[in-house]
Length: 378
Image 1 (cartoon, helix red, strand yellow):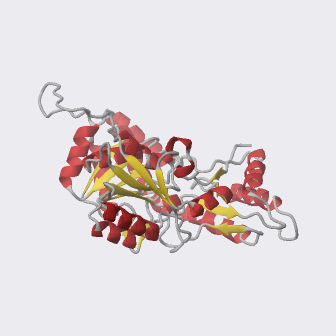
Image 2 (spheres, rainbow, N blue to C red):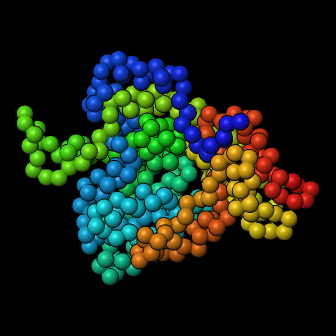
Image 3 (cartoon, rainbow, N blue to C red):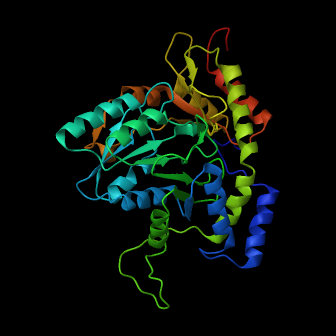
C-alpha cells in the first residue's frame, strides 16, 4: 500500500497540459509570458500592486530585507514558532534575530509581547530594522495590533505568508498587508511550482529593484555589465506555467483541506488531552495543515506515541515547528517569552492534510490515532 504523506504535491491532468504548453512554446528560461501572468494574477488576487516570482520564499525574504537595508549590527524581530527559513535571511544580511513567543489564540506572534519589546527597545534607542510576521499553518496572525504598534515606531512589517495563500484576516487577504509580503510554492504548500516563491509590495520601485537583484544584477545594456553583486533567484517560465494552473484550483484545494480538518476534529476531539489548533474564523483559514496537541493526561496518549503508530502504518506525521530560540544555531540570539511555543512543540503534531488525500486514507489516519488511546473513548 502507498504511504500517506503529510502534504504531498497535488498535480492534476490540467497541470500536465499547462506545463506541456509552456514547453511547446519554448519559453523555458527565467523569462516569458507565463512568468509575467503568474505575477500579475497572484498580485491581483491578494490586492498587491507589484510582484516578482522567485525560486523560493527564502529568496523573497532575503530580497525584502535587503531592500529594507538590513545590515550587520541591525536586529530583526521574528516569531520563534516557525520554520528556520523565516529567520535565516536575517543572518544572510549579517543582522541578529530577536525571537518573540506565540499567543495561544492563533499560535502566531504574540502582539502584546511584541508591543512590550518594541517599547523597551525604543526607550534604549535600539529599535529593530524590521518585524517579520508569520501566518502559521494557514491562519493569519492578529495583524491589526501588530501593524499598529509597528507603525507607531516606524518599523516596516514583512508578512511571511508562505503557508497561508488563500487565507485572510478580517477580509484582507494574507499577503496583502505589511510593507512586503511573500509566498512559498514549495512541493508541500497548498499550490506548488515544485520550488518557488513570490515577493509582493505596493511600491513599484522596490519590486523592480528586487527583480534586478534576482537576475544577477545585470545592467540594462547589450553586453554583460555588473556594478554590484546580484543573485540567481528568478523563477523559470516553466514553473510559472505550473503555478498558474495550480492557482486556478486554489478554491477546491482549500475546501478539501478544510474537510480534512473538520473530519479530524469531529472524530478526535473527544479523546482525552486532545486539543486542535484554534481557528479564530473558520472561513478565513486555508487549513494548510491540521494541527493538534496531545496533553499527557490519564487514559490519554502522547504526541510521540501517535507519530510512532502512524509511521508504523506507513502514514507521515510530524511535530509542530521546534521554536527557533531552542535551535542550536540560534542559541545566542535574544528571545522574548517562549513558554507558549515550547508547550506547543512538546505536545503538538501535524496530521496528513493534502488536497489529494481521499476519505478512505483519512479514515485510516483517524483509526490509527484513536487506537493510541485507552478507555471507552478509543
